[in-house]
Length: 362
Image 1 (cartoon, one colour):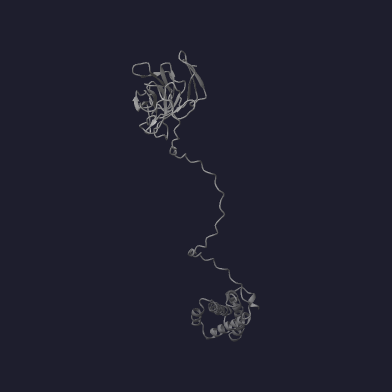
Image 2 (image 1 turned 135 degrees about the vertical axis):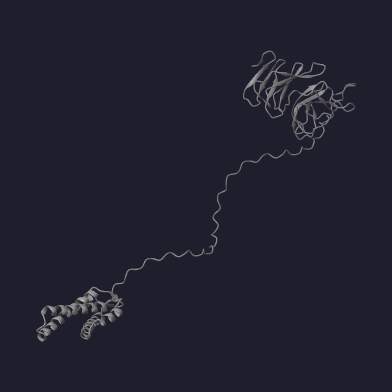
């Protein structure tokens, strides 16, 4: 029989037959021995009962069967071999050893050239080990291309006003005043302008350091006259009119403050009666014996619609409230058309108006 075709276990490079096959082979051998022994026993012991002989033989075969089974059990080979041998008598032990040797010789002959069994399945994959330390940083990459230039930013605020330029050369002297007559602007004892001559008075402004000028008309040449310097430096945003004592300037801005004050220019600057309201950027015209000042900014830079009159026909000039403008206005244009009508335009509105001393604005 080819034992390599029988089911069994792989032990190294040799495939052993299974215990069940070995036991079946041993049983076949035992049956043959039993048959032979029975025949001999019948011949020698004819007087023995056949039933008793059969039970005895079955007992011997069962003992040999268990001995062979325990000998070829892998885990209990040595221990069970000693225990079984103690139970067998001399003849049964010899018979068991004979059968066992035949089985082992057959296995050695048949299994020495048996091919290796198939490789068992792979074990499960082991756990992932801990992460290794971070390696050193690589070299820096090359610089990218420059982006496109952004749009130009908004224009910055205007810088401060530059210093005033040098004064121009003096114009030719004007004609002297008639004997006993003097000009209200120019000091007595200096060359004077005849009041019958047309002149243009240019008051102080931003960057003028309080200086004023007088020009001859219509030639616009410098008059031989030097007005006094305004005592508070740069002065602008005011309104002005010509009084019998000289030019009168009211409101405006000096010493970083909006003003309601008035100053009269003569041989020196003299404070006069102030307006009732602080005004900068106002406009004014003469109406009969009064001077009408309108609109402008107040001390909080709010645009005004109020107006006021300087009554000059009194012993002491006084300011009095007058009709309001149709809109709040500043830096507007106010032009006297005749003794009773005035034209108004600009100042933050596109509308224009005519003012009448009898009917008001139309």
